[in-house]
Image: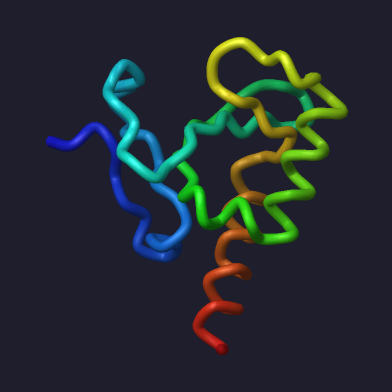
Length: 101
């Protein structure tokens, strides 16, 4: 089984980590790994975001928030201060915007 599962609702923008915890697998070409961290810092979810999605204004805002909260020198996977539910809503909105054009 593949280490990463494609999310049907947002397949053009991101992949979610497999629940089995295969974190040591190679990241597919064209994706950036991110760790979504909620306000309490618990329950982080790992996702892979397509590089093209980083051009979206909402993704740029998340990257800026990450720099402000965690700094530019984060070791390991880039942490984003956004819980999984908010991230999924944002990606759904990006998908709907892409389908509207």
